[in-house]
Structures are given as C-alpha cells and as structure tokens.
Image 1 (spheres, rainbow, N blue to C red):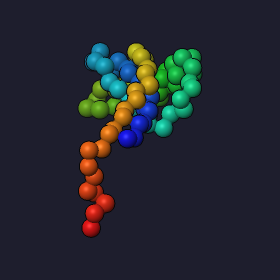
Image 2: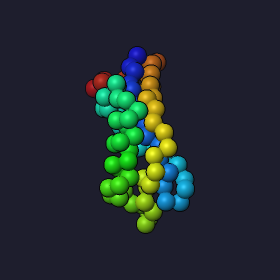
Image 3: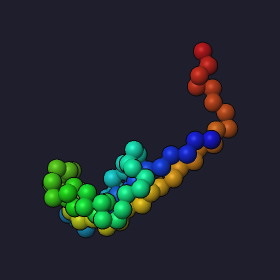
Image 4: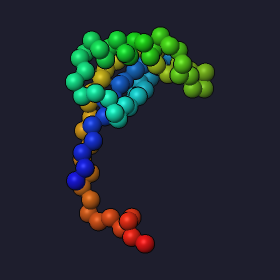
Length: 79
C-alpha cells in the first residue's frame, strides 16, 4: 500500500472557470497565509496561458489530497 499527499490549488481562470494546479512534493505544514501568498504570486506572474486564456487569475481554495493505492497484483517487474 502506498499513500501520497498532494497540495491541490484551485483558481478561477479568465473565463470564470475553476482550474487546478497539483503540487505533489509540497511541504505538509504550510499555513493559510503562506499558501494564499504563493497563489497570489502565481496569479500575478501571468505565465500560464492556454488558448489565450489566463489560467490562474484568482485563488479560490487549497487542499491537501491523500491518495492510497493498494496493489492487487503487480507483474511490472517480471522479465
């Protein structure tokens, strides 16, 4: 069984739709203030444009998401 933790940042884009940015190696003890500051910096950078739409225009939320994978079988190491 493998468990991973990812920080999922949710933003509003220029078309008023939700978009997510997932950070798999984020520190696990970030404060609300630290995350909001980082999200605002991402928005202000204006570096992420897809099909002429600014992808990260305003921060909406942030969550740590845990994912647990339980293997039933794994033959990927054979041969």
